[in-house]
Length: 131
Image (cartoon, rainbow, N blue to C red; front, side, top):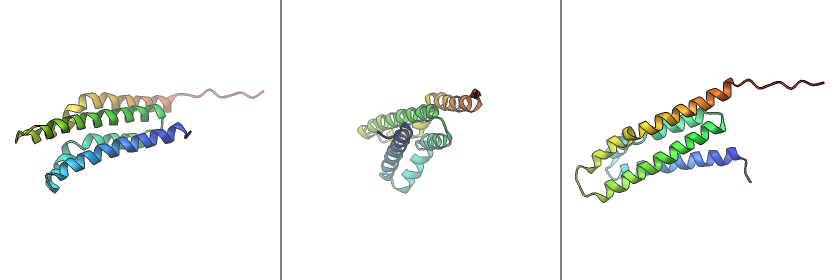
């Protein structure tokens, strides 16, 4: 069985990769302008989360980041399915708000990541006294 850090790294790469791939393929339907539009509004939480996970050293902070990435991925694909099913001409404006509406959940998760990281860095490890 691989070490937990390798499994966690694989999960992080998969969740961020699948979400970014979904954003890009959805944006490609509207041409290059659609890609830039979606990356600016729907892709920025994924990029922020990926950068934050890259900087974290503790497993707890990375697990929280993986949870945030998975939650945002599910959120994006649910909204994407609703927009694709709708035949309204104005449905694409929903993508502007996908990232913004996810922030009330993502910001506390990012704060929890920072708290776990800071707590692990400031914890004093007891020294072992040899006889």
